[in-house]
Length: 231
Image (cartoon, rainbow, N blue to C red; front, side, top):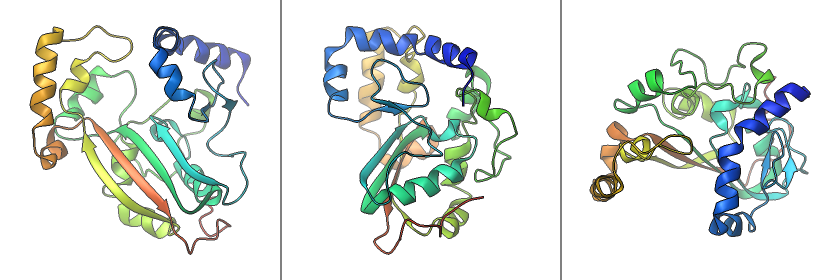
C-alpha cells in the first residue's frame, strides 16, 4: 500500500504524460483500444494495479504489454510468476525496456536519473524499502535477465518461452530529449540521424542500441499454477 505522500509525488511526476495526453488526440485514440493500468491511477488509466498481484484469473489474458515497467519492479520474479499464471496458453508478455550496451552504458550510468547496477542478480528481490517509491529502478535488470541470466530465467520460468529479443533505438533515442528535456539536435538533423539508423543492419544495435524489446510466450504445457512461483 502506497502512502498518500508517495501517491501524490507519483501523480506529480506524471505531469509530462498528462500534457502529452491532453495535446495528442492520436494518443488518446490508441489508449482507447487498450486496458491500461499502473501502480497509481492517472486519468488515462483504466485501473490501479500492482504487477506483483495481478487482479486477473488464471489463464484469462491473451497479452500483457509493459513499457518501462520491469526495471522498476523490486521483485521481477514475482511479476513473471504472476504473468505465467494469468496468461492463457499462447498468450504473450511484451516488454520494451532500457538496454545497457557499449554505447548506452555511459549515458544511462552518468546522465540518467535512474540507477544502474550491473552487479545484481535480476531475479533477486531488491533491497528492503525499494518498493516504497514506484520510480525507484535499476535500469540494468532487463539486460541482465535476458543476457547473462537467460539460462537461469529459463530454468525458473519454464512456462515462458523467449520468442523475440530485439535491440532497438540508436543515438536518435537520447537525442530526442524524451518527455522532459529539449531535443539535443535541431529537428532536421535529428531526422537525418533517425533515417540513417533505420538503414543500419539489426546486428549493429547490439552495440549502439538504447532499448530492448522482449517477447515471451506462455507455453501450452504450463498450468499457470505454482510451478513458477518465486518466494
